[in-house]
Length: 389
Image 1 (cartoon, rainbow, N blue to C red):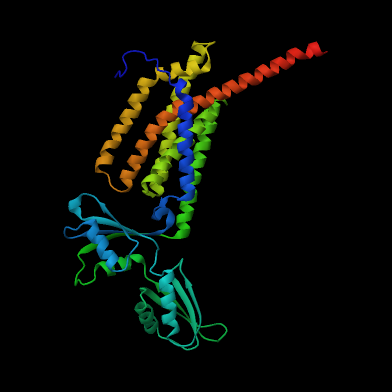
Image 2 (cartoon, rainbow, N blue to C red):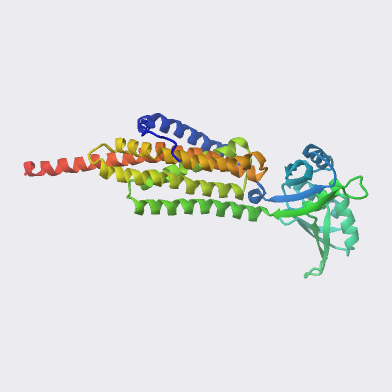
């Protein structure tokens, strides 16, 4: 298929300075925005609970959210999944258990009201309350007191008499947020009008570990590609490919920053895909540049690059266009993470094509000019040395 029937002669490289200026401003703005506001981290990275529900009647996301908030789930995010007639929703909320800082204070007061309590230690990360009582208590009395304070209880553990012999140790395990969701949405109903299909918990430490490993995977992949490009071509081509990749990653990250869509493991997958796409387009142009450097020996590198970009323009339009077309269906019918992945890919395709011409190529020209200037200075010094003698 031939898109461009005649050879083009657009002066792409001649516009490199304003393009670099605009790209630099946008990239700096995104980096500052990330440092100041940060991403809207999803459950994968921030930790929390995801519950999938399917209702047996028609209901809107707004109605589900209102029912949840009415029952005390104020930070819940409700997202429709599948077609509208499926009535299936994802509920996302922070925290793994019902034990929050506010609930822990109330539960502590309730436990202290049971008798002479010497130590109460709420462990919010694990949803556990440890305490010691000078008198022996029944698990039922402890459960009733904590539940009455507003925290669901999964289990009360009687740990027996303390090793020092100065009391009895107990442990209260708070219920998960999924239990709270079921309880809240079932209020006033004899039988729940929904089915709980799936529950995913991600603790804050696990979320932090996933986030760090995702970032390291991105960094390692970029370094590996840099090494490949450096060996495949030569040193003056490698930095351009790396800078283009960094540019594309920052621009796609800007989509998540501005749109406030959730940044999660799917986002990392999108960024890794964009890194591969970006370097693929850059290498195609680099390969043509290397061929044209031999073909047009003696021409300035900027002119050679212009010829190479024009020669590969038809291929670039076809490749980028077909890849973008494959995302249309996902953008139209996809929801949630699927839509976010497709939109991030679309942004990446656009900036990846742009960066191959206006980021990678100009850096290659700059490095070539720098090397030529250094060689000229060295040659001047060598010529002056015999005269000085």
